[in-house]
Structures are given as structure tokens and as C-alpha cells.
Image 1 (cartoon, rainbow, N blue to C red):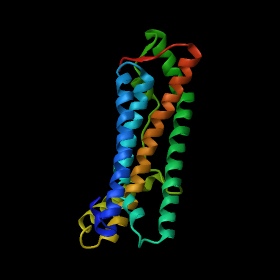
Image 2: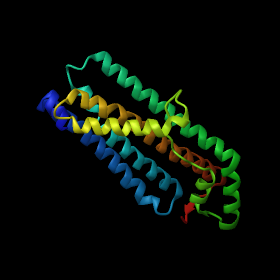
Image 3: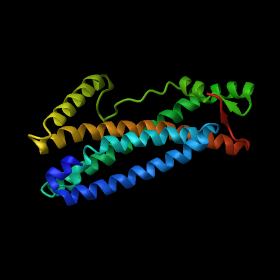
Image 4: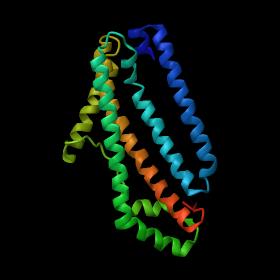
Length: 217
């Protein structure tokens, strides 16, 4: 909010704050609802973990969103950033969904049946998830995975530079901090997708077998 106030004025800063507060309240209320049922029901535990990832999405995005409240940033720049948001979010979410679907067919389903045979409706889902080797990555289309450590280090350096130069060079700071934050937000979208796909699998099992799966993790 401080950067928005400095570059766009108190009115735009207040507007940004209102929008952010509304989103935070919505996410918090969802988390409270999911958590109230997550202590026993596996489905809502997965929903809760997914909503926690959305909190991190908002936290990271909040460092780049002030750009959209600054009048002298050209519309085409805002449009490019918007498409960058959407593309990265979509490909990371799809990556997570496809990965879980593949791992479930190859590994997870067999592990689940083995555990469920001995435990009935109470399942240590963590064992199933671990067997599927779920490991979130920094996923940018066309970037080889072997570059991820170097790319991640560059993102950190850029964010540190942006945070340290936010007073002297606020415009540079917004982009130096904001673009890495968009990529970080897409990473947490991927994490959320992992949990949502697992929840979808659990929901389909419950519907097929007419049961409610509880967790003993």
C-alpha cells in the first residue's frame, strides 16, 4: 500500500487497500469453514491446504498489483502483465492437475487401495501423497528445469533489489519486485492445484463408494 500511496496518491492507495481487504476476508472465511471440517474429513483437509496456498498467492501478488493503480504506467504495459499473470497461472495449474492425474493412475491408486483395504474409511492420505512424489517446481513454459536453481536465485536477487530501492527508484522497484512475485504466485497456484486435484480424486472415490473418507494423518 505504501508504494501505491507514493506513486498513485492516497485515493488509489485506499482503493487498493479496500480491494485487498475484501479478498483477504473472503480467503480467511473459506479457511475457517474448511478448517472446521478438516480435522476429520480428508476432502476438507485438502481444500484447507489449497486455500492456504491461495493466501500465499495473494501475499506475493500484492507486491506487484500496485502497478494497476498507477495512472502513468501505460495501458499496454498493464495488459502485458495481465496476460503474463493469466498464462503463468493457467500453465502452472494445468501442470499440477496433469501431474497428479498421471501419478494417481501409475502409483497413487494402488497405494490407496492397499491402505484402504486395511483401514476402511480411515486413510493416512499423506502416505498416498508421498508415494506420488509430489514436488512443486518453478514452472515457466520453455524454460529447461535444470535452469530452475539459477532462475530462482535471480528472482530472489531481483526482489531484494526492488525492496531496497523502493524509495529511491519506486517504478523500478515495482517491476523488479513485482515480476518475480508474479512467478512466485504462479508457483503457489501450482501448489493449490496439487491439493485441488487430490480433493477431486477423493470426492470421486467417496461418490463412487458412498462413503466419507476420514483422515488419520
